[in-house]
View (spheres, helix red, strand yellow):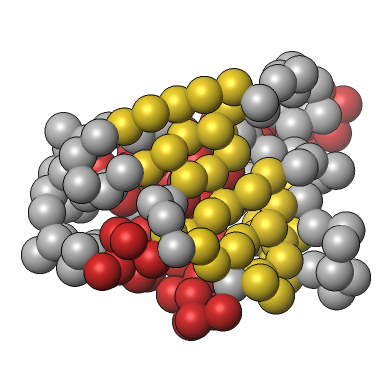
Length: 196
């Protein structure tokens, strides 16, 4: 009788996790959670190709519920990276498959001495739904320009990764915004936001 109870105790959570959804799948290590795959197009990113590749790898290494992949079909990506001469600015997500995100990687921030990979990782954080936190430490990628030009950390911290995982945990039932908010990261200290 005790063996039967033990078996039922192990089987019932596994059965429930397949019907309850993504959130329950995390409680059972034998059931892989659903992963949202976002595609990006970096064909117009020019000299940012290396920093983008590293920034994307840093995010993919840190999060579990979303995966960033280069698109195999230009023009069909969920978001795009492009090199610009101005300040970095990005669509504030979370962006979902079929989305319409835009990351403009501005050369002015690099000209002022900020690390290109950190900029690319920070702007990708916006695509994944994270707001700015300029008052944060260098260990937070979303602190952006706040810690100064000596900060070159391009890896999200555990809290940032957890927030992104939460943003995509219930992707099937997620409420998606009907507007596009653009975050303009003026790495010299000014911050503007606007709606599109």
